[in-house]
Every structure is written in C-alpha cells, then in structure tokens.
Amino acid sequence: MEESLGVQFFERNQSGLQLTPVGEMAFREAERLATDMENLERKLVGDDSAPVGKVRVAAEDVMMNELLSPILAEMVRTYPEIELEVLTDNDVANLSHREADLTLRPENKPQATLEGERIAAIESAVYGAAKYCRRHRNMDIENQPEGCTWILPDESFSHLATGRWYRKQLKNVTSVIRCNSLQSMHALARAGAGLAVLPCYLGDATKELRRLSDPLEGESIDLWLHVNQDTQQMARVRMVMEFLVERLQGLESVIEISGAL
Image (cartoon, helix red, strand yellow):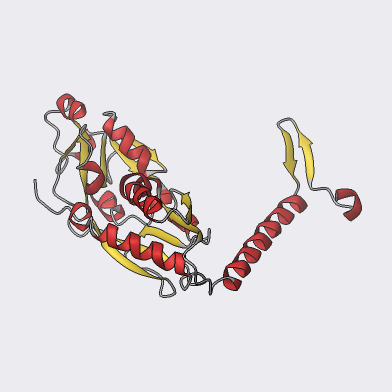
C-alpha cells in the first residue's frame, strides 16, 4: 500500500518500527471508519426482535469484579442464547466511546443524551489494613493526616466525587502513592502500604481492611446503568438490561452502606 500510494506509514528507529505522522493519521482515520461502520451495523439491526445474540457490557474493573461478575454468571446460565462480551476500563471516559450496549458507571450528573437507570448511591470511607493500623497506633487521620502514607488516585480519576475530600483534607500530605486504578488502590491498601479512600461496598467486604471513618459526608456518587440509544430497542439488550437492573438494585443495601463507626 505504501508503494501504491507513494507514502510511508512506518519508519525504523533503534526501538523498532514506529508510525510516521502520515501513518498516525491513517491509523486514526481507520479507527474512526471502523467505529462508523460498527455504529451503522448497530442501527441497521436495531429493530432485532429476537433475544438472541451478542450483548456488550462495560464497567470499571472493580465494579466488574465485585458487583457484576456473579450477576453475569447467573445471567449466562439463565439465558445461554445470549453471547456476552465484557469490556473493562479504569477510565470511564473511555467506556463511553466503546459503544457498549450497556455501561455501568459512577457519575452524579449524567449527560442529558444518556438513557439508563440509577442503581444506588456509592458511599466511600477511609480504610487501612489491620497491620498498617498496628504500626501506626497513634495516627490521627482527621487532624494529622500528613502523619500517614496515603494511596491516592491520579488525574484519570477526576470523576470521583471524593476529589473534593482529597483536596481539603490531604492538601499538606507528602507521603503518597498514586494509582491509575481503584483495583490497585485496593490491593495496596490491603497489603498495608497506606490508607485509601475506597467505596464502602469494596472496603467493608475485604477482611484485611478496617474502616477508619464514617462514610464521607457529601462525597457519595450515583451508580448508573446506561443503555446505547442505537440498540436499546433490541430484545436481547432490553432483556439483559432488565436483568442487570433488577439484580443490581437488589444489592442497594450493600452498595449504599451508610452506617457510622
């Protein structure tokens, strides 16, 4: 193709092959065309009335592992004719561009163009491993948080409601570990590396962790299940959405942990 078009898509350097500026532009255009063709296909089959075929469900890693996995396992046993495709990403902004049929994501102000069902409000609190707490028996996370090591989200987690709490309470903290996934924050806290603000449904269910604060006041975030407008009328998508909404709303008491210490 390079020879026929008279352009160079790749160039070789010390680390191997690398896209040229023309190659990068061609790659972006190819991605766009693939997405457009996929969207067209979805619109053409949008009136599919049979509850059979592929349904794509997207969520962040932690939600997939802790909330969705057992529900999806039940669903595929109940509806074996559904071909399930699972997409995970730690950045919810990416999920919205993958054109999944259903997306489970936390957000307090969904875009007006998004359709879906509110599931519950996710509460968060400060957690630390029992072994970390034993090493820091005199810690005062409310008045002297700078005396602790904190496991914090990086800028890719700007959508988290707890960002306000971080900016207010931890502005003078210097001992930090930054992560680009909630899964990593949870793993490090569980291993005793430091303290972390985690969703209560996750922290309270982890035997190695201790909740060190009440749920952070005013820092909850809603959990939504959004449906793709192009495929929401398809029987299989409606069936899966109804199944997920019913099961997830049945977990409301687990997700909306609000009890004080």
